[in-house]
Amino acid sequence: MNGPLFAMKPGESLSMTLPPVTTTQLVQYAGASGDFNRIHYDHPFAVEAQLGGVIAHGMLTMAFMGRAVGEWAGTPGRVKNINARFTSPVRPGDRVRVQATVTAPEATGHVACTLEAWVEDTRVAVGEALIAR
Image (cartoon, rainbow, N blue to C red; front, side, top):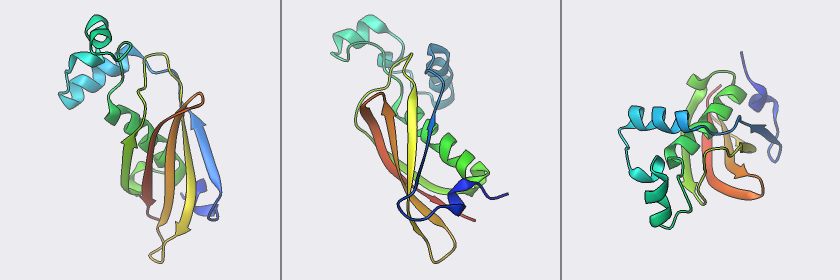
């Protein structure tokens, strides 16, 4: 089943706001990725590192983007490529809003889109995705 991305024209957008980021997600992501950097779980250490507190893994933020794109594609298996650059930290309690804007249907039948992730009025990540039919 094709998701809503395939019915969209260049310039059209979708957005999804995810539930608040939890400390449990940070712990689970650390275990899955092997990234146990203290900035992701040790509040005093993250404050001392001048981060203002614990921050989520950047790749967890990208996973939120991938989750949204996978749903919009109809199935995650259609997401052929996704990338992101992180512009601001995400913290426990933040609600990440993912937005995809179709840039062009590809000649191969794929759909290309730009991605942005936001927490309130702050853009926390930008990227692109390529989705197969």
